[in-house]
Image (cartoon, rainbow, N blue to C red; front, side):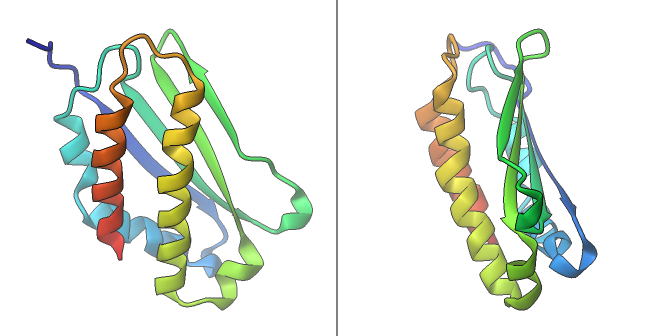
Length: 135
Protein backbone atom coordinates (compact mmCIF):
# COMPACT_ATOMS: atom_id res chain seq x y z
CA UNK A 1 0.00 0.00 0.00
CA UNK A 2 1.35 3.42 -0.97
CA UNK A 3 1.38 6.23 1.55
CA UNK A 4 -0.72 9.22 0.48
CA UNK A 5 1.34 12.31 -0.27
CA UNK A 6 -0.18 15.53 -1.49
CA UNK A 7 1.34 16.26 -4.87
CA UNK A 8 1.28 19.85 -6.07
CA UNK A 9 1.44 20.79 -9.73
CA UNK A 10 1.46 24.56 -10.13
CA UNK A 11 1.58 26.45 -13.43
CA UNK A 12 2.02 30.20 -13.68
CA UNK A 13 3.18 32.65 -16.31
CA UNK A 14 5.52 35.58 -16.68
CA UNK A 15 4.49 37.32 -19.87
CA UNK A 16 3.51 40.66 -21.30
CA UNK A 17 -0.30 40.95 -21.43
CA UNK A 18 -0.36 41.21 -25.25
CA UNK A 19 1.04 37.70 -25.53
CA UNK A 20 -2.33 36.47 -24.20
CA UNK A 21 -0.47 33.83 -22.17
CA UNK A 22 -2.95 34.55 -19.37
CA UNK A 23 -5.68 33.03 -21.57
CA UNK A 24 -3.61 29.87 -21.98
CA UNK A 25 -3.11 29.76 -18.24
CA UNK A 26 -6.84 30.29 -17.73
CA UNK A 27 -7.66 27.41 -20.07
CA UNK A 28 -5.26 25.17 -18.16
CA UNK A 29 -6.70 26.21 -14.81
CA UNK A 30 -10.24 25.60 -16.06
CA UNK A 31 -9.40 21.92 -16.59
CA UNK A 32 -9.20 21.44 -12.82
CA UNK A 33 -5.77 19.83 -13.05
CA UNK A 34 -4.57 21.17 -9.69
CA UNK A 35 -7.28 19.39 -7.72
CA UNK A 36 -6.67 16.17 -9.64
CA UNK A 37 -2.90 16.17 -9.14
CA UNK A 38 -3.25 17.11 -5.49
CA UNK A 39 -4.95 13.77 -4.92
CA UNK A 40 -2.23 11.75 -6.66
CA UNK A 41 0.76 9.93 -5.25
CA UNK A 42 3.78 9.55 -7.52
CA UNK A 43 6.25 8.86 -4.72
CA UNK A 44 7.93 10.84 -1.98
CA UNK A 45 11.11 12.10 -3.66
CA UNK A 46 9.29 14.78 -5.72
CA UNK A 47 6.14 16.33 -4.28
CA UNK A 48 5.84 19.65 -6.13
CA UNK A 49 6.39 20.79 -9.70
CA UNK A 50 6.18 24.49 -10.47
CA UNK A 51 6.08 25.45 -14.14
CA UNK A 52 6.53 29.06 -15.26
CA UNK A 53 5.41 29.84 -18.82
CA UNK A 54 7.77 32.67 -19.80
CA UNK A 55 7.03 34.68 -22.93
CA UNK A 56 9.86 36.99 -24.03
CA UNK A 57 11.43 38.57 -27.05
CA UNK A 58 14.10 36.14 -28.30
CA UNK A 59 16.70 38.95 -28.14
CA UNK A 60 16.83 38.42 -24.37
CA UNK A 61 18.21 34.96 -25.08
CA UNK A 62 16.64 33.48 -21.94
CA UNK A 63 17.36 29.80 -21.62
CA UNK A 64 14.90 27.30 -20.30
CA UNK A 65 15.99 26.01 -16.96
CA UNK A 66 15.01 23.67 -14.19
CA UNK A 67 15.97 23.75 -10.54
CA UNK A 68 15.40 21.03 -7.95
CA UNK A 69 15.27 21.73 -4.22
CA UNK A 70 16.10 18.49 -2.47
CA UNK A 71 15.03 19.83 0.93
CA UNK A 72 11.61 20.92 -0.33
CA UNK A 73 11.29 18.12 -2.91
CA UNK A 74 10.29 20.79 -5.47
CA UNK A 75 11.18 21.04 -9.12
CA UNK A 76 10.87 24.47 -10.76
CA UNK A 77 10.77 24.60 -14.55
CA UNK A 78 10.84 27.64 -16.84
CA UNK A 79 9.43 27.06 -20.32
CA UNK A 80 10.27 29.91 -22.70
CA UNK A 81 8.05 31.06 -25.58
CA UNK A 82 8.53 33.65 -28.34
CA UNK A 83 6.66 36.87 -27.50
CA UNK A 84 6.50 38.14 -31.10
CA UNK A 85 5.00 34.86 -32.25
CA UNK A 86 2.42 34.77 -29.45
CA UNK A 87 1.32 38.32 -30.25
CA UNK A 88 0.36 37.45 -33.83
CA UNK A 89 -1.20 33.97 -33.61
CA UNK A 90 -4.67 32.82 -32.58
CA UNK A 91 -5.57 31.62 -29.12
CA UNK A 92 -6.00 28.08 -30.40
CA UNK A 93 -2.46 28.18 -31.78
CA UNK A 94 -1.14 29.51 -28.46
CA UNK A 95 -2.89 26.71 -26.60
CA UNK A 96 -1.50 24.10 -29.00
CA UNK A 97 2.09 25.43 -28.80
CA UNK A 98 2.02 25.52 -25.00
CA UNK A 99 0.43 22.07 -24.81
CA UNK A 100 3.04 20.55 -27.14
CA UNK A 101 5.90 22.08 -25.17
CA UNK A 102 4.45 21.02 -21.82
CA UNK A 103 3.91 17.43 -22.94
CA UNK A 104 7.29 17.14 -24.70
CA UNK A 105 9.51 18.89 -22.21
CA UNK A 106 8.18 18.53 -18.66
CA UNK A 107 8.47 14.70 -18.50
CA UNK A 108 11.85 14.88 -20.30
CA UNK A 109 13.14 17.37 -17.72
CA UNK A 110 11.88 15.22 -14.84
CA UNK A 111 13.59 12.17 -16.39
CA UNK A 112 16.98 13.94 -16.22
CA UNK A 113 16.81 13.76 -12.43
CA UNK A 114 17.35 10.48 -10.63
CA UNK A 115 14.42 10.58 -8.25
CA UNK A 116 14.41 7.68 -5.84
CA UNK A 117 10.79 6.66 -6.19
CA UNK A 118 9.01 9.03 -8.58
CA UNK A 119 6.52 7.19 -10.83
CA UNK A 120 7.29 9.05 -14.05
CA UNK A 121 5.29 6.79 -16.43
CA UNK A 122 2.07 7.28 -14.46
CA UNK A 123 2.71 11.00 -14.01
CA UNK A 124 3.43 11.41 -17.73
CA UNK A 125 0.19 9.65 -18.69
CA UNK A 126 -1.85 11.76 -16.25
CA UNK A 127 -0.06 14.97 -17.25
CA UNK A 128 -0.69 14.44 -20.96
CA UNK A 129 -4.37 13.65 -20.35
CA UNK A 130 -4.99 16.75 -18.21
CA UNK A 131 -2.95 19.21 -20.25
CA UNK A 132 -4.65 18.03 -23.48
CA UNK A 133 -7.98 19.28 -22.13
CA UNK A 134 -7.08 22.83 -23.20
CA UNK A 135 -7.61 21.95 -26.87
